[in-house]
Length: 70
Image 1 (cartoon, one colour):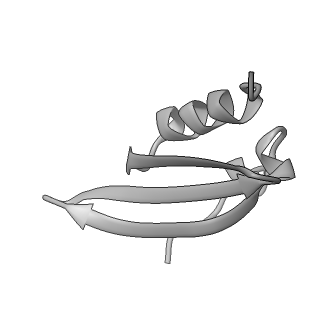
Image 2: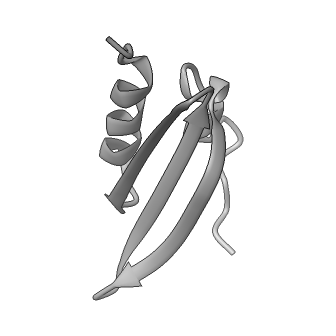
Image 3: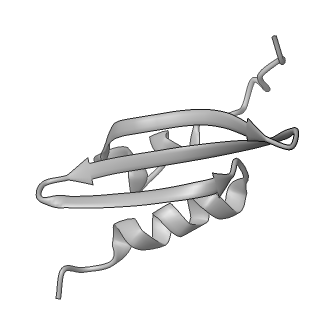
């Protein structure tokens, strides 16, 4: 099992994603590269991302989380 750094904070536990509930999170592998599917809800909104399990995926979710419903 990989060692988790002492200072590590899961991306979904940081603002603004910490205000959202995870309704789906699945890891899988394509050609040896770790992939992830994440779906989160807050009120009547749902945000979804899928792709490489990296900082860019969480950044895309962060941007979706701060968008307004205009």
